[in-house]
Image (cartoon, rainbow, N blue to C red):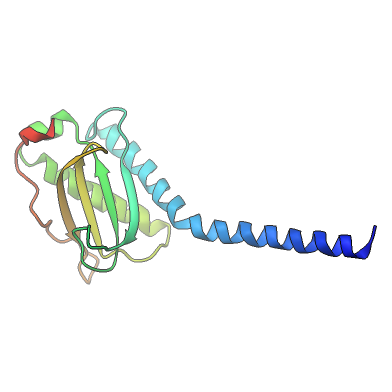
Length: 158
């Protein structure tokens, strides 16, 4: 073999390894969000809080104009509550609080960026019918949602 051929193959191999390392670093936050979504879906489905067969969607990102949050990194949680949850007064607020608390706990286990907010979206993936913003206080406590979660079943939900 010629030296130039070996040298060329070494450069190609180094470039390929570099691209794989860069891709792994870029996809790490997405993998963490997917793991949180999987665990949260299993937890809420076992409790009967979400529609059977539906999945909780978790997106971790920086605040933008189209979100309810104004600044900082946060997490969007999209879930479809079960009929039992929608039909009883106060259950939507409890579900949202539980989902936010569990998502925050699962995110901390992954040692990601600290979250400043959580946006909870109720409804199916095509069209959410309610959005609320939970902010995180200085001591790490989750503050009241803005706007408040409606206390009763919303007719537009189904």
